[in-house]
Length: 155
Image 1: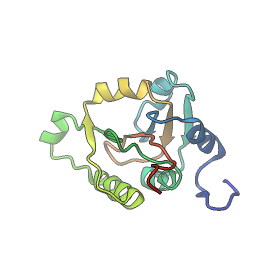
Image 2 (image 1 turned 90 degrees about the horizontal axis):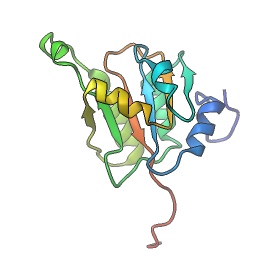
Image 3 (image 1 turned 180 degrees about the horizontal axis):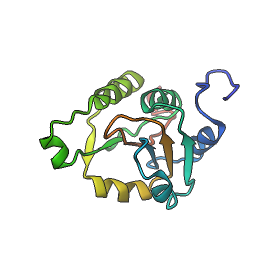
Image 4 (image 1 turned 45 degrees about the vertical axis):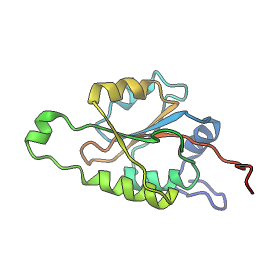
């Protein structure tokens, strides 16, 4: 738990440190309980931060309180559902929760990119950090691209 004013207490210190070290364009992966966090995260600068007791939606909402999302290119990517799962009628209601959380935090509607499963794994290996969650919803993996803060010069 983090004992600081204005910081969501579900964000562990290691995650806050990683978020602070990320620069514009760096990416963060929230992996669900089935995501190969350790093998993918081994390729990233911060490896893996374990948040196994947390659901991805609550963690996403907390992260979005402190992490600005990129405004110049797609800041959110989801793992695309495999054709066999589409054919079987699988649903991804968590995606709607993610989109609502992002819209609320950013005050704008953001188009989410869908990335093929194995391309998602490769992109995740290039992320700054992988956060392992305990999320059990199918296809609950998401990549966030950090944006910038500061003056636009128009104030």
